[in-house]
Image (tube, rainbow, N blue to C red):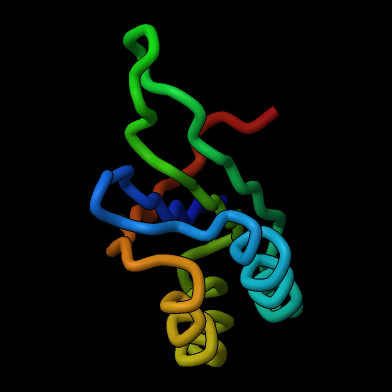
Amino acid sequence: MIKISILYPSSQDSQFDMAYYLEIHMPMAIERLSAGPGYRGVSVEKGLAGAAPDSEPDYVAMCHFLFDSVEDFMTTFSHHEAALQGDMLNYTDIEPIIQISEVAIYR
């Protein structure tokens, strides 16, 4: 199983509309990506704080999609890439960090 992580770094100069992301963008992304082969699930996290007391979080938001394989994700994502990436300007000006990982432990 693989995890596609989309990380939105915190920045005082950036904007992120969490309500839009949770209520509009993510339901659209889930509807489209969950219809593809190998989809296992998704989680979305809202950053609250960093490790130091009263510090800002390193990431304002994180999204993690689980798929059986990179190929399953890429096949599905490629059909919806334009719509999903085009919608980003509606909720953020942050350039996300994308990481694909192999899930080594999952319980």
